[in-house]
View 1 (cartoon, helix red, strand yellow):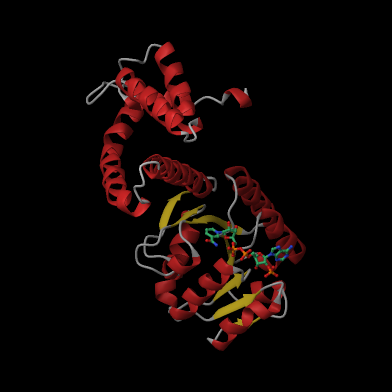
View 2 (cartoon, helix red, strand yellow; view 1 turned 120 degrees about the vertical axis):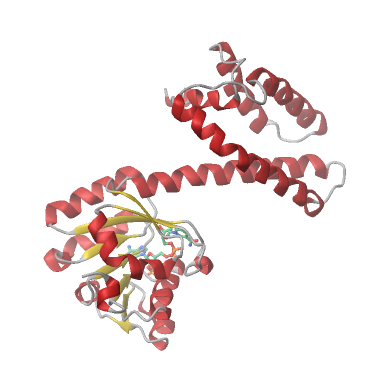
Length: 299
Ligand code: NAP
């Protein structure tokens, strides 16, 4: 039976840290009978005042609902809490929104399969304050039927809820793929703000230009994606050789102003490698070949 057929289906949330409290709060707000459990019981007080049922144990919490959401510090804690529960999870859907790697997701899926549990791995692309918003993105991967059954309840957590596929690893991989974008964009902004700071330009004055540049670069993504998927990198706008020359300016500028130059030096080192391999006349998307190999430190 789907949630929509069942009315607002009961949900259990295990782990009431900053994120778990937000998750349970969103389920309650959407009319789901919500059972909660946390190691430190005091964190359930506010939710209980909003109508949540406090379970006395993790086992009782799991037994209360067909959908069990766990969100704790890491996968070791997930196992510490759930391993001793025996078959109380059988016949329920376990959704793990704890952050981890794709390897941990696959291992946990195997662990669940050995016990006959139905398992969805998930990843949350927001902070607790963003839970429940219409544009909030959460990823799920694992059996489609389990996602379909509980989609309506899971949509309480974010309107941009997305099912990625049967491979449990996908949620963590998307999480990692987006985190690398986030840190690279933010580090670029911080480096730029540090450069402009040497001319007493406040970061707030720089911000509008930075936002415009980030939007421009975002517009390039679909074309790059097509080139990556086709394995052909025609230089439709500029060549890697042209980028390389500008990188040298950036390193020189940073060094001469006393600004940390490790980031542009790293980018240039990757680019030098691409040029040495004959990609100087290609478009920038050809740099994907450098990322497909382990770094020197990992070799
Ligand atoms: P948090 O506030 O530190 O909460 C950690 C939770 O794990 C608490 O419920 C804590 O219980 C529980 N826990 C830790 N060790 C435990 C143990 N040995 N036994 C039982 N329970 C244990 O962290 P959070 O911000 O809620 O994050 C939870 C997960 O969500 C993490 O994997 C995080 O990466 C992910 N996440 C968080 C955010 C965010 O912005 N906060 C965003 C995306 C994803 P106690 O209360 O008893 O200590």
